[in-house]
Image (cartoon, rainbow, N blue to C red; front, side, top):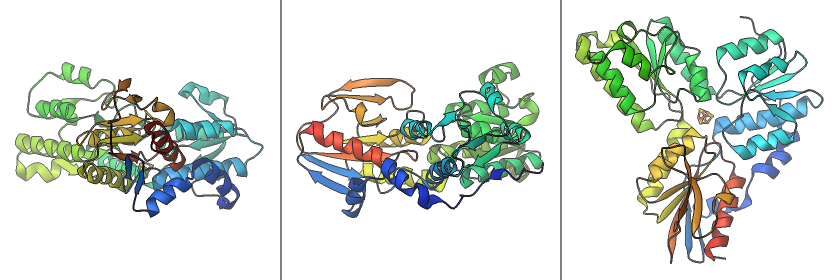
Amino acid sequence: MTEPEKTFRASFGIKGIVQHQLDQSYHSPLIDKIRTAGFSLRTGRLEIRLAKEFGFCYGVERAVEFAYETRARFPDRRIFLTNEIIHNPRVNAELQGMGVKILIDDASRSEITEKDVVIMPAFGVPVEALREFQKKGCVIVDTTCGSVMSVWRRVESYSQDGFTSVIHGKYDHEETRATCSRAAKYLVVKNKDQAKQVCDYIAGFGTRDSFLMAFKDACSEGFHPDKDLGKIGFANQTTMLSRESIEISEMLRLALGARYGQAELSNRFRHFDTICSATQDRQDAIRKLGEKKMDVILVIGGYKSSNTGHLAEIASEFCPAYHVEDASSILSGEKIRHKKIGAQEVLETSGWLPAGEIKVGVTAGASTPNRLVEEVIQRLIDISGAK
Ligand code: SF4
């Protein structure tokens, strides 16, 4: 399909106009200072250590800048976001405050006309939504991250060669929905337990009905496991736990090798690691920080943020770790509100901050601005009596 001239995929070149606004909302002099001081801050009884890689990734930074530029470029038009631009409530609220409206569901697209501007988020949109916007003739500002698009290219090539894309991801995550829409046949597996179910089926265990029931929301229409698991191309949502992705890929490779023989494997299995480098760097950095024996680690980011959740999972391997949304989550030195590791539940935990001199590790997901990290650190200093 020929794209209308109204689609923009690169900056409007007016960052200078919005830079002040971006700095006001997201920049943090305190974080700059801690970085310059070797990612460490000593104050009172606290030694605060920042992970060497944290916060806004290149894809998020670009998407947010592009959205601000869009507001400046089209001051008189209605502007819609197809979804949250990134999974951070503060950033989405700032954009809403600038008059950008977030479409809450697919049905709400009907109010868009050719006079409007639609911003597509960093994790992209499904092909059907893109086509609908193109048909309406509205201005499209596409902030999809290049690393997400490289996953799309991968699954498209699997489809062209007759392979089913098995995607390690969350089937209801926007990025994975967009990726699935580019595959002729797909199956989404969330974790190693689900991967094992797939491997067991390849080995001849289980019934088709129970398999389809287990993956009813996570496979392409008309998926037929007897036929569609014979040739697998593996990919992942860019923000998954990289170690788990590698393990799942290997499980599938072994299952196909055992079923069809090693000589057949190159015709039946393809693999490409599509974890993005920003996710990988943040996961490596929190692991290194954990190895330095922190007493407690704070992981800052939106509760819907997949990559923040995985950082919290890694941190919890080393010491107590709390996934907090912002400074208001630190209720006191006694109580903290946080998302349970590996679950959706939000809890309040008592006795979270140890007494005496302590080392507190801090990291933040790829959608968390530095200003928010600063506010959490400041709150920590205030409630610990460390001023
Ligand atoms: S987490 Fe990775 S894929 Fe997602 S926006 Fe950031 S750089 Fe792009």
